[in-house]
Length: 127
Length: 195
Image (cartoon, rainbow over all chains, first blue to last red; front, side, top):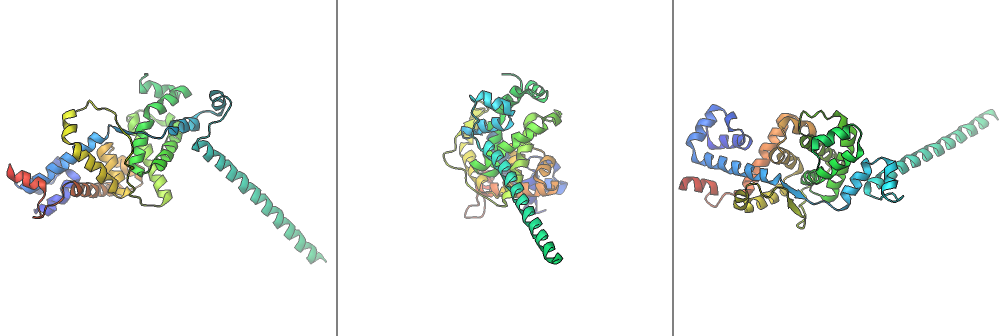
């Protein structure tokens, strides 16, 4: 087995080296280059694990927005002195409702126009 | 502070106060994962909101077979994947330089942290340059420890595709962190020979 062949396997097996096939494991045992590559992958994985405890700070509004999204409507008023908070969640909900209302209005208007046209053509045919 | 398991049980029983406490305890972690997956603050915030909506709706289905954090990470990954797919884009946005990073657990192995400080910084940079599809798999597997099967489920790909993406991502990261020198060998090889 050649270094290039083993190299392909190392990327996927660095954290579970016992899963390497026997020919690859034998090559690895006697090849400094592949051992060095494995060491690099292992260090890389170890450093990756340390990133797990790093936390990014979201914007101040995020927590408020999330809490508002999941809060029952009745408590929103009481917790904010009768005023609804205007996070993006609320905006999104309003936009959604507005969209449905606009679509319903358009559908109604379309139905009226269609009914008028059908009525008109029937009148023509009758005359 | 109440135990998270206790909060989950209370929230499942309908306590809104308990659910809010759960959100408070976990939203920074959720945001960090969402940010690592999307590479954008606004997108990450949207993903976090969608995630907690789903958690709110689906909490009763959480049986506790896995840790709550794992369940939350899976939902976040799924939401981020849906979000990025909906946008139909392939972003490699860089994280802003001024993004504040808080170390959740600084007391863990400080010597190792100091030793690999540069490597951590290089790795964070290298992760930013990965295509989102590769980045998602390597972040979920190597930082958040999700099993291949869960990653595949949440990203809507096969397990073998997830493994292939993981190989590619790790290979790119290694090549970025340990570039070949002019003689065609890498630093690790030189070190190994010297030993």
